[in-house]
Length: 397
Image 1: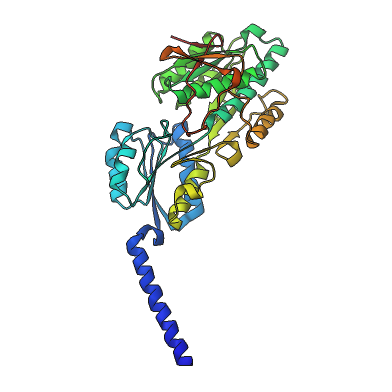
Image 2: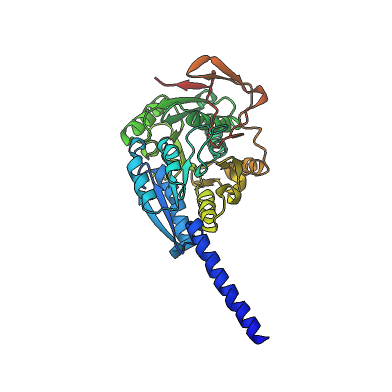
């Protein structure tokens, strides 16, 4: 009997060895000792957007250590994406993350079926046919924008109550890169957050028509300050606007609301609050999925739309950082927490809603009435609200 058991055990070992070999041939990435992970950045870590995205790489290194090998390419422009993309895929990367907006990623993905390509979303993917190994993802940024608007509104209310400004001087400025729906959605949510505290607030928007130019962004912020804005925010990629606010002088101080990276050290007397998209939850889950040989969307916790994913405060994909208690108005944290709690309960109906009419800047005949509200990120991670609110938002020329 003992001999029979021994033969059976040896047979099992042989069969397991054969099974493992077959698995290695059919799905080599699922049994790799070390997962090769690539990151391609549109800029470098000196800029807020890329710095914020690089925190996800740091999180992967911290969690997985020697189980991963990370390769990073920085300062890759969208139209220069192909060469580094092919180098990483040909070099054996099992999964590659991108924070650029190039369509080349989706087009080239089918050539590398053993690699998973994960790109921060740059267009509406709902209803589109995409390669099975191509994925998009983004935190629902409008939630953080709205909450940061509450912080700005509380400060403006304090300035009005203390007689520093009058009610008709409640003007916020926004330094914006391009008139895309992502940018318009963000600054609209920010303004509506401000108006939830100070209903008469209006906004001036200045476009730089570039994502990253310190000189242009700083100049745009200075012009907005000169035009009477008392709080400035941005959707661009340098610290220029924060510096302009910190350097503001005269009868009233101008305050700053950040995006992606804390500005409290750069602008200690001007910075109020920063909202950021947290890329870490998605990136960590995607790496975990590839390690386990599973579909990414089966592991990611969020709102899944095919191979596209999004989430907000409820899943930790959006967060607020560095409320400057030395600058913020009393009661700001509590006011923000009330809104965040509503988002965490799945209630976002209060953001894009009110007695407003929005106009499509590319087609004035296309308007939207917000009386019944607008549901952002309902079917896609890419923000789609692209209407400029009549009477309360002015686009500077």
